[in-house]
Image (cartoon, rainbow, N blue to C red; front, side):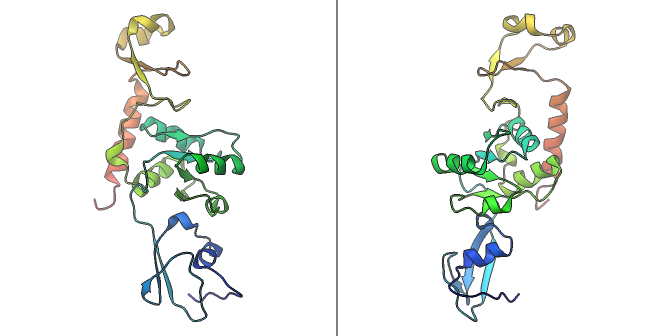
Length: 214
């Protein structure tokens, strides 16, 4: 498609002006040769921009903006390190990315276009389960899932705990039917393999079935 511009414009600037954040851009070709996003375009250039290939560009540790709380919970259920707070502003998100290499997940394309963002993704769906499927497929996470190893509330890794240690905190039916428990050492939330465990296992199976190539 033809793109009209004035003055010196980089490929990054022109592509982002079309709504595509630079973390989602992979190979760039200019007039049939390999190019860079920083290259300055010339009148008549033929530019090809390809999507970044699926797979984790770095260790899959995520930072989510304050509109993706349910997605953060799902990713934590699958064992992934996710920083999320309801009151992060854009400056705080940028600061975290500067000091801690993470993948930014946000539906705010302008946020993803910030120069400080190296790795990121914009979930297309508004449905949290569909967003989860998108992220697992985009970063090829299916074989990295370790369900119920991280606290959904505070993101801390869980630790095994004996039933006797927490007996006074359990409901009668939980005491009767469950013997294996984990606890978050940070917020003291207790976890066991109840009905929610079966639901998440079913969700993982659905994601695996929708994996590209199947």
